[in-house]
Image (cartoon, rainbow, N blue to C red; front, side):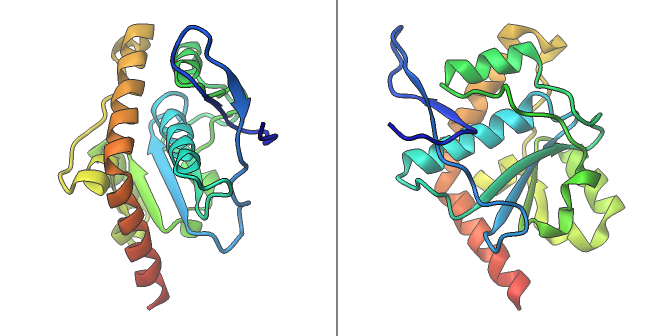
Length: 194
């Protein structure tokens, strides 16, 4: 069994799901290309997307992902845990989000990220307006994985059912779009080197 602290992933999908730790991503400040996933408060969508993406990278056989994947919120209050519904939605995918704490994009060190992927177009517009130099690296997650901009809306009333549906959508989007995301990250890293 892998003994890695920050992420848990299930081995099975039946009622006897086992949860175990996975690998730690490269530390901030490392040379690893970095992706920042952004939503509003950093308590549902972006942390779910962060952990789902890291789980996919691990499932691909990347025990020590060559990328750094983090999350933040455009209007986040610092230090809050994910909402209970997000925590439970994560557990359904074998992900333990209990250590996650919200943070704002201002605290994230935006210049470190090769790609900044937002859940909604309004998040991307806000970041591009506030930080015009980052505009080439900012796009919606939908655009990054499919080429078509679409929003991943905040779950209605933050109900458990709506959060579960959002987690399912994120899992499908990331799974289907992982190859495109890897290509975008590579292109973004190369563009930054020019």
